[in-house]
Length: 187
Image (cartoon, rainbow, N blue to C red; front, side):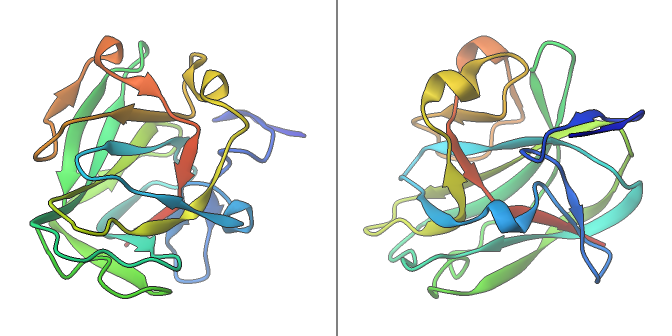
């Protein structure tokens, strides 16, 4: 374990990773040892603390062995996280039903508008697929159980029955998620 004065203790889990292309992974990609299945209408994702101030233009996600088929909506959102773990949408991708359509593929999806992230600020990246006859599996990992993800501050979030990205989410409307999906913020 190390200690970063900006982001606090670094236990490895949830520690971001700066990649050679300047992008920042929401956790170290070496932890993405399996895939996490997305489910229709389930909006979920990991929390993380940025280690690098930069303007991002894209968000990268990676499909595992199962691609999506027949989706009517595929979107990714970047959220700020307040001290109570409430989420506010600050950047997002447009709907793209070709997103996550090929297994084993990394997708760099452009944001509708660039966004300046700030070092030391807590964010969450969420993904949503709706209407798919087959939901994709995304690179990531699963924690032992939901109680780990539900302890404040949360490591991940989940809210079901969504038809589009919510503009904000109150902590009481979400449950913690033990499913951690990998994403990277791309300049």
